[in-house]
Image 1 (tube, one colour):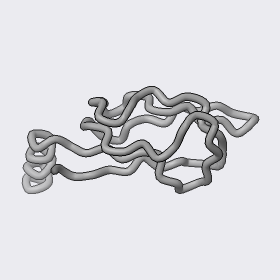
Image 2 (cartoon, helix red, strand yellow):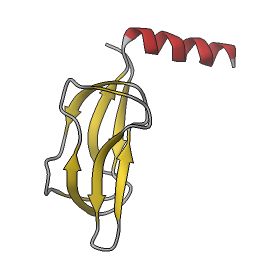
Image 3 (cartoon, one colour):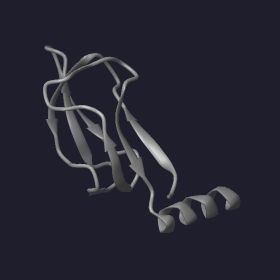
Image 4 (tube, helix red, strand yellow):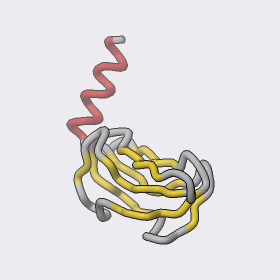
Length: 89
C-alpha cells in the first residue's frame, strides 16, 4: 500500500455532491465533493493522484471543519516518484 492522504473539510457545512466512489482513481485537483453552508457552495479537490481508499461521508451529511471526508492512497509508482523528488530536493 502507498502513502495515504486524507481529504479534510475546510468548514462546517453539508455534503451536497459526491463525485466518486471507493476504489475510483482520482487526479490531483479533481473535484471530489461539493460542500455548502447556506451562503456559499465550494468544491473540495483531491490533494493527490491516487485511488480512493475510503469515503467517510454521504450526500446530505453535516460535517465540521477538520473532519475527514475521504482517504486517497497513492499507487506504488506515484509513491516512488514523490519519494524520489523528496530525496532530490
